[in-house]
Image 1: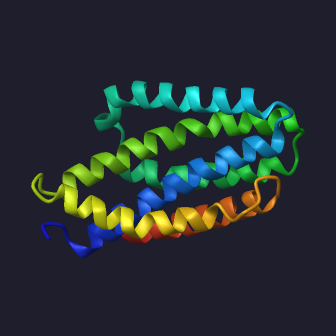
Image 2: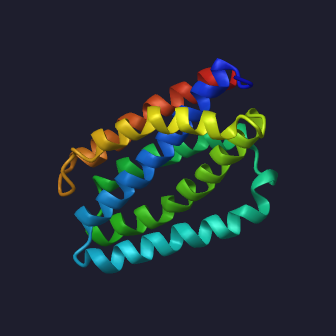
Length: 168
């Protein structure tokens, strides 16, 4: 393979992190909204719009700083969930949704930088083979439970430690 093991592990983990991020954001939207369908449409529209906008300036963002700040901001936001009403909880979800969009674009950009163009298909298959079973395990968490929030906090603490280890 033309990618180092450390880079493969980082790209795989970043894809898992951002897919889990979106999955849990979607579950939290179900849990905290009275009209799930409207909230889900608004969340997906915001994510799509942010991905479209972010594609124009993704190379100007400091990747190291972003990968440090995303879990930190998300942990603080999740702590605020416990002290706010359902309306403000939805606002928090919509406030941190752009972090997913920009993070996904950054993960794709890292994948492009770390791999040779002739090897991308095979490496993407390996990454999908590793990441998809974990996403299926995430689907076992009930959508209407607070375990989504607890898991979200835990995965962000682990990510903060992992990104710190990777970038030093």
